[in-house]
Image (tube, rainbow, N blue to C red; front, side, top):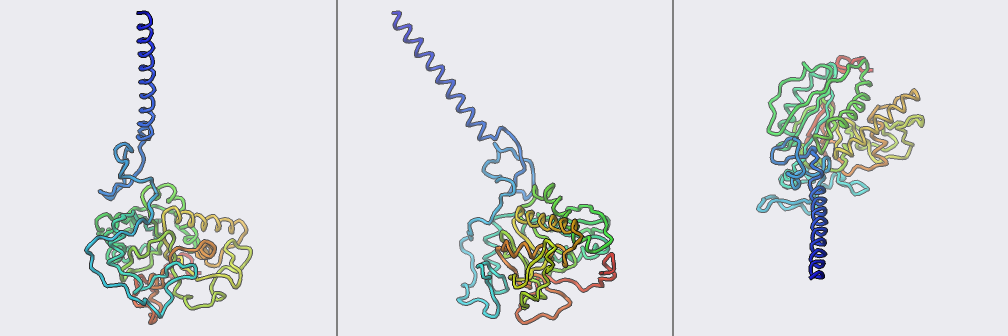
Length: 364
């Protein structure tokens, strides 16, 4: 009898200990699954906006912040489009020597591109600086962008200006927004150019990285004339400068003074890229924007300014950190120049203007 009681006590004690251990394990799994009930910013695909989401409720819907990447290239079934040409453009180079696409009209199908990328639903940020008299270009840029730029994608225009009152009311499409950030005025146009690297770096770090997956840096004194769409997406995309697309590398206006952080030696270089439009994944763009800012600051400490300010630093960076896609000069032409035969479509064009009148130091 005594042995039976002892046996029951032994079994009961082991069951209790086993139950407690199981409860602890279950609690640990639940803690990990719920992320200790910590809330964070997540993308909510169904509403196209930012809101605070609880991991335990939205585990399957909200990816890690800033983790958007180009995924599988899935296309909807039943889509009708022309068969890809056996031979694409033969009058232009459509690939770089590091095997990155070089995009021209005729090298992609917009129907296929849109079918693939609209499902990915990235949040797109466009950084624009409209300081001083450059606010006059806001209306034309924004209205034309609403007609031609990433139509039916979610886009926020981040307008940096020293005069909020000059930002015009614009009718925006669904999922499109404007965010205005106040910055100081400038006495030299070079300060505006260099300042946008500083203010963009700070604002990406403080605000934009919580609200966007993909980022464009663009000049405000431009107009969209035709489609600029998801064919521009890649990890880091650069645009050929229209003025040097046929030039020898030693004719590029690189910074040639070794004292500058933007220095590129003779007989080096691939292309000359414009700083009027470039884009990429949010974190890759942050890295590049911050690089241009910090390198410009280093130059300033040594009493030197790169010949073309942030464009010089941009070109040095892209020489040693190759872009994953290059866009042709279709993506930034100029109203000053005649259109050559290889440019089948002008997508964005810089406006004719009196630099002496619109720039704070008369264009010098």
